[in-house]
Amino acid sequence: MQNWNDVIRLANHGGPAPEHRVEKTDAEWKAQLTPEQYYVTRQHGTERAFTGEYCEAHEPGLYACVCCGTPLYDSRTKFESGTGWPSFTQPVQEKAIRYKKDTSYGMTRVEVLCNVCDAHQGHVFPDGPPPSGLRLCINSAAIKLVQAQKEAV
Image (cartoon, rainbow, N blue to C red):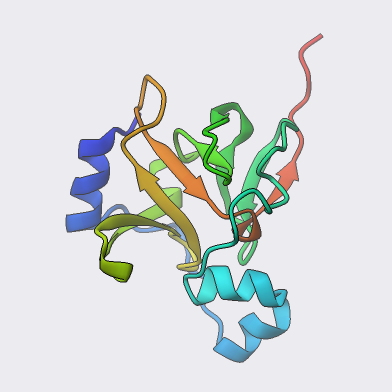
């Protein structure tokens, strides 16, 4: 399980390489994505708080990158942060996402990117619940619910 020290180390020194890469031209991304998805994922934008499709969602399943379909987050790690964006405590695997130091807008933060296609997901903060203490604050426009989990009977 990753913690804040792991995130800082990965943001400063890089993380594991993905098993494969998805690279497309800007025109190909624009043709595939909605304008909001393109703005968030390819231009490192942010959707307005409390407006995203998955902000209040509670369906069980896996959330994948809207650009390349790589599974990134499990609904079992999703929690109500009160911030206005879907929040997760961990990625599905360490190599699923990449962390990058972000000094935009006069702040120092850690950006979360899909490790396969470099799609901007959001940011990670050290104020999440135990045991990781992480809050991956993710834009709904950057993810899609792709696989419902079967309920145990």
